[in-house]
Length: 101
Image (tube, rainbow, N blue to C red; front, side):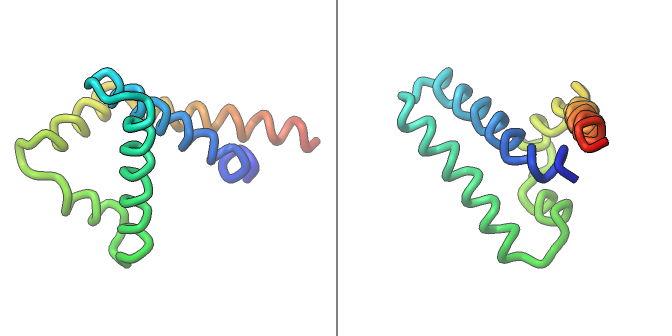
């Protein structure tokens, strides 16, 4: 549990840092990049909190066929983002079990 819930905020923050750096590469200054990144996450979390549909259904409601979001998600899937996250969290869970024993 610790490998996911205890370490989870750091995973989210790492992804937030990556999104922030992408905003910066697009020409936004550091403060604006940080603000836009946080607002992106905050808005998404609020949508999920206020919508009883599954996360997958909410995601599908955002994705347009042959659009930019679909292209990005396809790239993430092709590059193995889920596998990377599964491996990282698995490593944390394994470490937590060693610490606990």
